[in-house]
Length: 164
Image 1: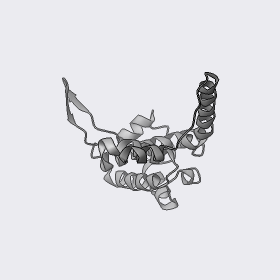
Image 2: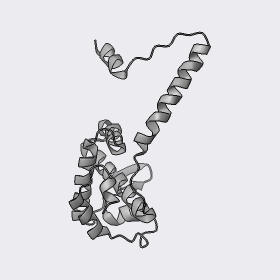
Image 3: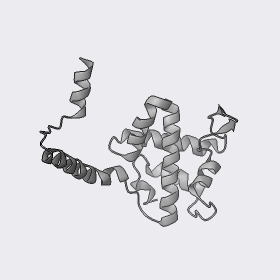
Image 4: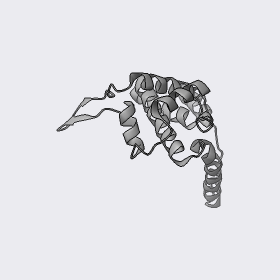
């Protein structure tokens, strides 16, 4: 329970229900993909020649899938989490429902690895921000060494200027 409480968007009640449905022992699932297939949260893929015929998820365990979708909706509300960034990346292309299913799929993969390795949740997006800003500073210094002047402008200002 304490491991699952570290995930953004997972409350105590949803962690209890998830453990009741899935269990604590992940030894019966060879991989996270097997758990997602069993839970019915994996993306459907039916190809014949070059035609993609279906994107529906399998209809297994609708209670578990509904709970995972609720957890994904809550995880998306935490703006600085990895799940929110994945949702923001997928929503414009795929739509809200498919993006939420994709976030629920990633959430279940994280749960599998946490229960398998007995480690708490680590948000990779939050841990990479310092490295990204450091690499951006290095790139700015490299460009300035070439003799150019660099001024970093926030992305929101650029978007605002393009619309005008």
